[in-house]
Length: 203
Image 1 (cartoon, rainbow, N blue to C red):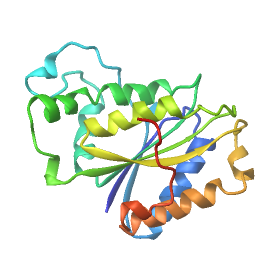
Image 2 (cartoon, rainbow, N blue to C red):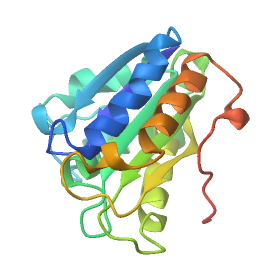
Image 3 (cartoon, helix red, strand yellow):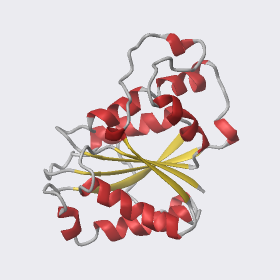
């Protein structure tokens, strides 16, 4: 089991990072091979809409995404963790989403089969300071289409409202334990339908 995790918060050691680490702790203890990429510590640019990938399925922007595409292709499970900034994922997480355009071309224009012949699973971990009822609706739609572009099925995620100050996630009664338990289930390779996460309800 290969798990590739993207940490989309600019604050290392913050709430999003702690939530993701709890997930990865469970996954590693279950025997999974895990890699975490901190998006704010690498060089990735947003999509330039240059159209160069339209015929080849390969992005020509010379940055760190060149090393990330093969990691995405090889993963069994992709985890995206991002806090909510103004009801959206962070800008570097959005850059990752936009750069999936090259893989979207591979899938829908060039009609290429999934890399290594396997369909991946996608999991989203997110939290926000506000308690808005629809806080995670829009971002889930964005994330779902990102996963679709990279040949992954969006399985759902874990979402927490009212978490703001650095380290506040430690005071949440269930969050870190839920993330750890989810990591255990994913790492063990348990059936996806049994993973303890929140399933998307929006179309």
